[in-house]
Length: 221
Image (tube, rainbow, N blue to C red; front, side, top):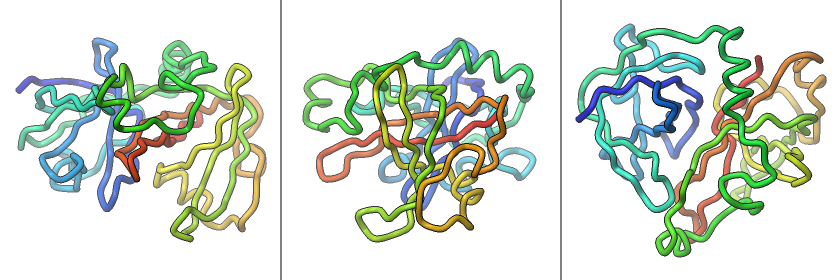
């Protein structure tokens, strides 16, 4: 096991738990996973030393060992040690750092598709399953998923490529909870001119043989 510090860039819904991810001080993506099915994290895993949970731009210290998967090479298996918050980036620090970190597109996680066959990933493991993008003019959609449940989506263009991805960020979903079904521009969801919106995109667990891209965090600075 190794001690690692990382800047939290996602704390998203995963099954009935959470998926947390970020970038280490060495500039590498990391996704802490547990020994539970699919590596899902629960409060006993991610509750911090002060009783809270990781927030975007927190600097978190964990103890973990590499545990890569074909669809998620950044996975690190955590120990039983309590996670610690050891610092936090300010918005003034985070905005330029994320701007430099963001993928320019048009490809997101190596392709223009919204999902990748898991069998293909077993043959050709993913080079990266996490990234940050900084699109302009996002159209926020409130719709239904395949199970008929309410779903938040983000439609955007990145370097000429069009994407429409589901949002699994619980904070952002809560922010939009009172909106009726339909599509909304940035100013209609409280994102004013001059603010930067970054999206953390992650490749999810296989579903019907496909690993889909999703937005694990909406970061408005």
